[in-house]
Image 1 (cartoon, protein in one colour):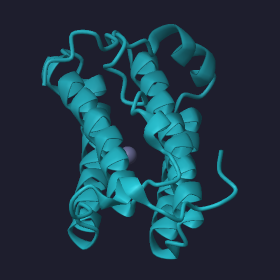
Image 2 (cartoon, rainbow, N blue to C red):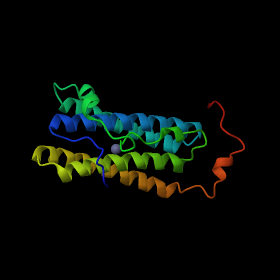
Image 3 (cartoon, protein in one colour):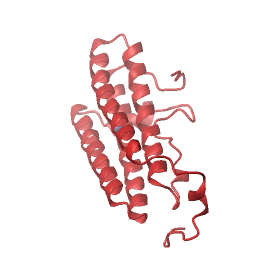
Length: 176
Ligand code: ZN
């Protein structure tokens, strides 16, 4: 994957800040997706997404701890800049509408995880700093697990047949 617009890592704090941002955005994404699945009374997927939000949240906080004195949020605001459309967090949440099926929710989750994975893989492939490489490899491992989890879930929630989901005659209430 060519990611010319992704932020360049020149130090370990850069990597930590960017990883922190990716995790923080994942927490937000999974929270939105869990809410959506609750609207659909899909308690299984809602629980899966809540678990993922919690796991990414723990990882985000762990990264902040690893960064020590560095304010990762502040540093992220400086270095975690993607070219529009290339950012792992820029999964289009506007399509998280009330007719979203489990399959759609999982596609969004998968897209976010894949972009995060591709980003860390790129860091591993391009950095010359062994410390950055070692840490990025850990992130690759974690994101690869999340990608696999999404794929496993997608086997249980295949794409809705036809386009019938678009014409839901009885939309869930309480959504704008
Ligand atoms: Zn992840």
